Length: 543
Image (cartoon, rainbow, N blue to C red; front, side, top):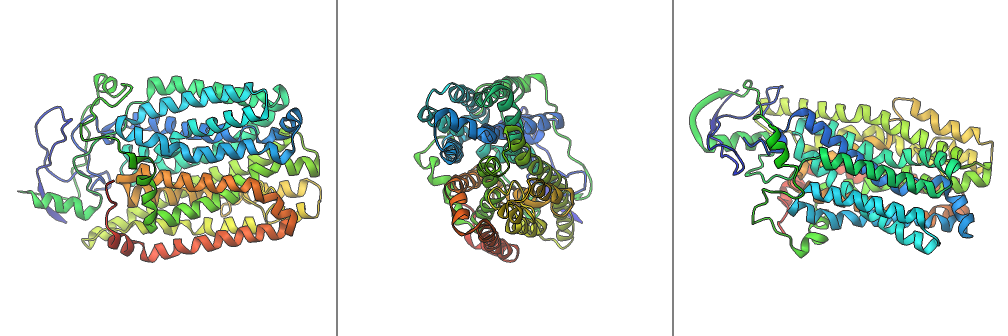
């Protein structure tokens, strides 16, 4: 296929005034999406090692955000005993942290979108450090609640900015794996937390759970301070589809023709001087037009919920993550201490191992598979002179859509500990030995199908909405996802156990599974109508 191409407009940050000719191609011979500028300050042009280093750091910040919230969960019983409160009441310090972590990105992201992502990450992790110290030092349960509210609010910046940073750094054909790694880390922070917290609480007491969180936040601040450059960049244009890339070049026809299957793009050199320029505390290249408005703080991000391609995946993600991950974390220690007299270590292992293994195995399949699906769809569409619809990626969600409600329905009634196994609910309901529910929880994750589970739902939904559909508003979309997830999770601690006690845990989890199925139906509608709906609604408004 041969196309006439154009002289590319050069970004104002470019070091020279020269122009480049041609569509910039990836190693598969397809147009890069989006088309990078010629500036070394463009994150798309960063060296691969630096992109990966930033991805790891941002993902670990998201990991810490969820770990800070959940690390105390296996030790809620000794915490309750020290403050002389009920065990269910003791979990409220976790639910308040879950709730405020849903609000944090609504505060941090508007600042980050104006002054830079680097500064938001650094301030966020410092707040995480200080609030963890405050939690560890609390002398009353009321003080602990306040410290935990800040502990949820502070470190949560990565939950709202992380997906946008992935979009800043990686091209469309790379984002499935990159976004999958980010969501895996943000998910597994809560899964690894009870394992760490269980051992720490046993050897040092429940307060050392928070001291451990403070230490990890401090170490992460040092790494980010020296190794995380700015990724915010003002792009002169965002050619987001193959058709738009080619059309843009034809519009400014220079009468030069090249084949669309050649000329792999090589980014400009990235020097140490360029690196230091991007390591300032705020974005040195911020244009005067980039200003903060009052609507940026709630109205702008939540306005994205009027788009089905955001609202439906965000709701489904929140429900599945809530029932398959947050709910077990909130109830496991109470129930297993009551039924099986577990200590903090066994509570942590029972809660964390199967979730950790299941999510990790799921991500090994989800990111690469959906990237491959999109690549194949783009090849076929380009051969017909068309675009591959973003909804292609949604077809990779089916395994998770079947696995999660199946595990929830038959899974652990009270503390389904993770990704609900078919025997958990029954075994806990009839108070069998602890071996049965624990085996029931771990075995499904040894199987390839079940281990897709919640992680493939997370990865596919995030990548579809943030990257494939509305990449220019990826930070706002990510805020919607985080807000839905955390607010939904906040409510679980108040009704999960009472609801199970009232109607029976085998029935309460059947209800939860039915909710998972109902919220999946709009995703099916998106698979077939999503492209039409997006075209009808147009691009998001600029607030």
